[in-house]
Length: 200
Image: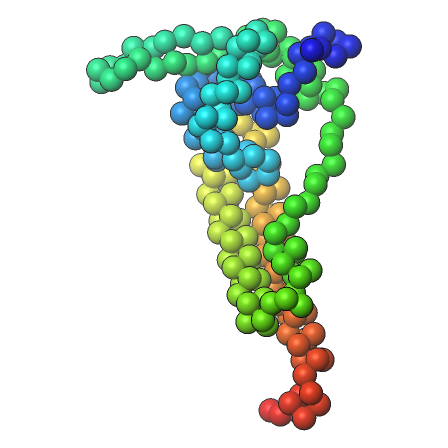
């Protein structure tokens, strides 16, 4: 099935994989997985190997990627590497320029648990928010490290900027979780009997 431009209808994940190939390198499925874990996972998608390979097959079928086997020097089995085709480059360029951007959809597990806070014990809620704060800080630090390792590669200037966005996003998530801990403490304090609130 194709749209008005006769471009095959592909899911956004296919365009993400084709986008990885658009930097012009010949990459194996392993390379693509490694790079997606250092970039895409911070803001869009953390694919499994099976997802990467199924997207590559879809892209080859559409004529947007080609592959070849490369002999390994170590004597292990040959490696299949993928490259974007001219049609693939034109298609992903058109997709990036013309396709309407979907607004982000927030599916935030900790917020859902907070919404159900009346079903949790206070210490469970504090533990949940502490874990979210620690997770966000860990992701922020990883984004910083990955951005630093890629900053000397001019071809990846925009992916590096995206990692800066991820760094700022996770910093705000960390700070929001910390602020929410204060809000939960204030809520608990307001709900406590008056004689308990007056205790030092």
